Image (cartoon, rainbow, N blue to C red; front, top):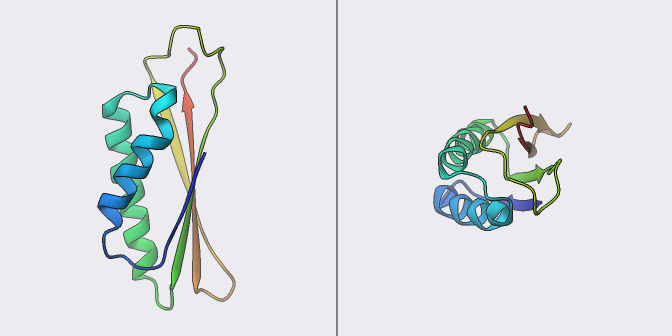
Length: 103
């Protein structure tokens, strides 16, 4: 799981890319999936900072592994993103759920 808090839009792309790569490294997520996830998450963060009054964005990435660690790694991964605003509008929360496709 990765949780990061951004207080500014400056440098989001580089910080996020490094943190994502480290967070999912143990799960052997393909680089193509990681890149799609990074792009989607960066877009969501930029959108959050464009809202009036947003001062802080909290991002949480959760990974659910549904197979033993020593089993063959799934070649396909999926993710979905949930964006939420606090009642005061100053804080935005972005939650990402990353999962292997077990089919």
